[in-house]
Image (cartoon, rainbow, N blue to C red; front, side):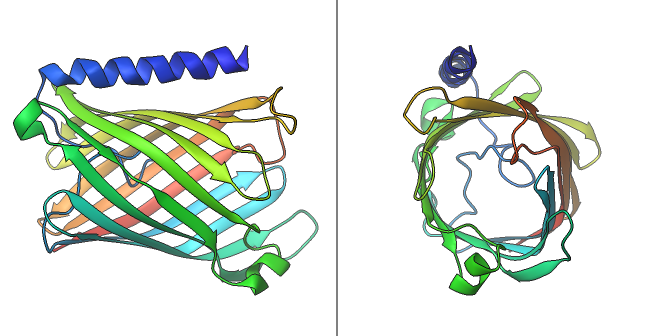
Length: 259
């Protein structure tokens, strides 16, 4: 049943992407949401997100403070990314520990532009690993590396900005995953966009079968405070079979600096 749920979401995301070809595009994904979008900062421009990200699971609490997400536009359709968190971890019956967290590096390439096709599409390979072995040994960051290979699509339907993303996450020292997300945004005030997201993760079983699915429901907002400064916030939780790493609460709060 859970595999069918994921396949349904994958088909829905693809269908959404195809339907966007009849409308002009504007990206709504990325911080503070999990689902990303084809948007890039632009040639020679920077986008820096400074955030606090808090997660609560049965295994304990994890807080990235700060989570420094640095993005640079190389040409009009390529984005370079480095996400470097300082992470605090607390497990039941134990005190807080902190250190360098799970770093993430990526290159986004938007190979279809909305000006040409009426919608945008990109791929965004990302490599993540623990910054130091000390953080692994102390339980602050997981061991092994991960490689995420997704495709993103964005467009506009009426007054709603829509994004879809599908990708495969190859996990070292753990089961591989499929991820699919759908995000929608709508202006809800002067300079304010209200955001909604469904993001589903299917984790393979140890023997390649009997996997499990977690569905993240996320709501958030983006407030363009000045031309180069925005305030970002989101909150959500995962639904599905209760597991030790299920996100019972997820919070994001940060600022976005563009120049």
